[in-house]
Image (cartoon, rainbow, N blue to C red; front, side):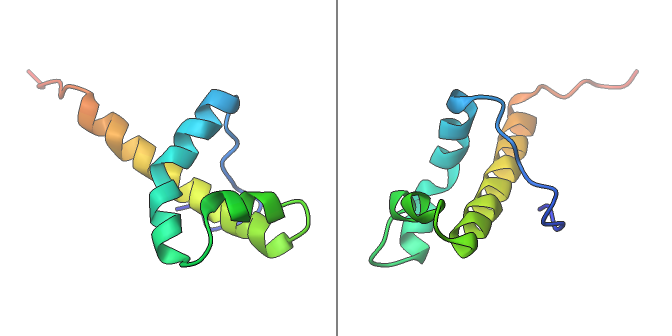
Length: 79
């Protein structure tokens, strides 16, 4: 996971952002009882804490995406 607050995930387009959010949405909802991922996203313009939380969850999503991509790629045997 990225540790520098200036190093964060920047999705290339809306489709990638939606995909990354889908990887963590359910986990966020389970960790934050009484609120949803969308609740947090609505507060982003007004809350620096929620901006940081969103950034951190997208970093988790990017890590998950990398792991899923690695699982899908066939291993190439060295000769």
